[in-house]
Image (cartoon, rainbow over all chains, first blue to last red):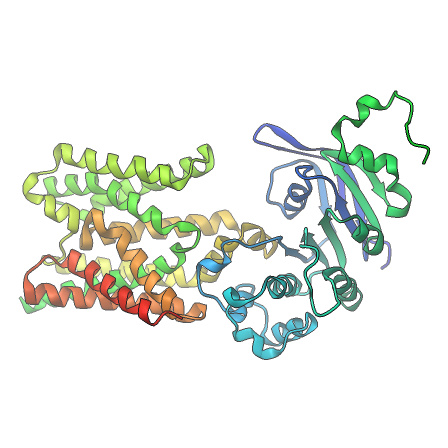
Length: 234
Length: 254
């Protein structure tokens, strides 16, 4: 089944509060791909993820493979500490089977007795792992991952990205990931979309992440200077 | 006399219990604040009911619906903070009511009265509470998830709009039932206090939800009992018992 399209996006336009957030975006994701969505703040990265989840109105086409199960890992959950909840409670909101709960927590490195722990008592690294585990419950084929905080220790040396790479192999996942972190893009992803309202580049990072495309991505004015002579020899 | 007292107790315990249970959902996203303006907004409806002699909850209900539409407009259309809603609606509800509220019945409107609840009213209230409890129990975990994150809920195939509609509808019914018992001024406390107490005492969701329900029912029971012993109005006594239990819970906070 290698090469099967999991997601096809064609001429996507998202307008929120009369502002165009995403303009004429097209790309596709194949099974087993890790697609990174790269771009500056306010470029529409998170809006894109939420639109793919069906949370924003849009024009154009978003076509997921039939019967696909999608897991979502948010950046933060500010309201979760408003009410007392154990990790078990949090998983039961998703109606995951008991056995699966323990299994998944095991794969993010927690012991079984961890289920009783109160969410409010977790460190931020632990909480991030719980969020990933929650996204994995229900055996999703695709995981949408909104800007994991870099620098959080998963366990000892392991970063969230090593950890995701491992999970991807174990669980045959396709991953869509929003990030700022360029090193992640090179190490971890098969494809990258440079997004700044419009698509600046799309393809394997080694091929499409040129100094030119990055400059274009991170400075809106760059197109006004294109006619000037380049001042770098690189 | 005995029967009358038992009827009041039955209504009090059911409304108090379900208000506590539903209130446990309203502590997230600061929804408990919303019960305040909703309660106040019912005052004109209560005034009309008292003037024309029909059930207070019935008079209150259309005004709660109006309040919920206002919340929707404020939150979705104008993106003003909830505090603004509170300031606008709180005062206008009270002001409108006092234009035509018969002064002799002001106390009933403001702090409620279930001492003279009729058997048919009691039967309807208890049945409504039971139905409400079953509905809320069925969608409890969905509402929790929607309250935590609409994105997570959507990724879990939950119909967020439908869940929110049932949730707001349930709040409307419990506020309408609550104003008869504790009045337009105190209804917010009926949902907020038991949940806050349970939050202090629990470590997981089951303890919290059940705790809020039991504490709500118990506060109403003790409040109505105290009303019989002292003759003070039941509404304020129910709320004060709730506050007392809350203060105790602060000592045992987990």
